[in-house]
Length: 342
Image (tube, rainbow, N blue to C red; front, side, top):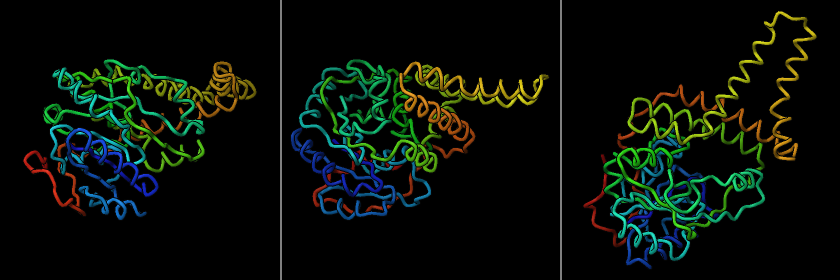
């Protein structure tokens, strides 16, 4: 099997990620680690090449996005099973054994995940995420495997590619939607699968960072890629936040119409203030915190704008080969009979 670690400037975490992966593979009888780097500017690659792992790097740094890393690793991976891991994660001991046993007993399962243990509980964003407790993070059959998962190569080959190289986020949900449209099921075990260190960036700085990196364009890119495809219905049913962002766009549109209302200027100003304040007031009541309410509304605005930008972005054929460089090959690599370069 293959563990694909996707990295971008992870010098602080990459060694722990690689070491946990090598230990996990040793526990299941061996395999390979493929580190797919998106042109890190720190010592990530230097550290990675000191281990018996295959290190590949994106040839064009302008192509950086969340979706291209797993696809780059997939092109150079050989295993019958493929695990996707972020460079700031470690695989929990014992998880791969449980996952492989479950897949052996359930041939209809195309991908399996576990519980990601969040080690950064100080960030406002991660506290909010924990409080939401999405259904797809519960044990049992799920509609996506956020936080990484183990996939059958057979299922990925049927889906055409492991990750849409156009996506700046939502790449795991896109894969899940494509797999489920083909009849494959996804499952989440109650066991811990990874430890995640997450971001320590202040929440508003993180929003700006995600705008600059186009991370928040992901939903729009996901929708555009699904248009006319069999998995479109799964996408529309699964992205519940779509309704929220559409409501934000309608809120903006309503505010823009106020100067054209046939009422006195004072009434227009009062209407503008009342409508503009409504989401903040409602969220303050719901969350019992003005700070959390303001962050929620501001983040909605960022993501709604990003959705529009992503929807308008031109696409590259997702099955096209990702240009890359092979930087390091382990002394005893797996046979390349499964390696996929299409």
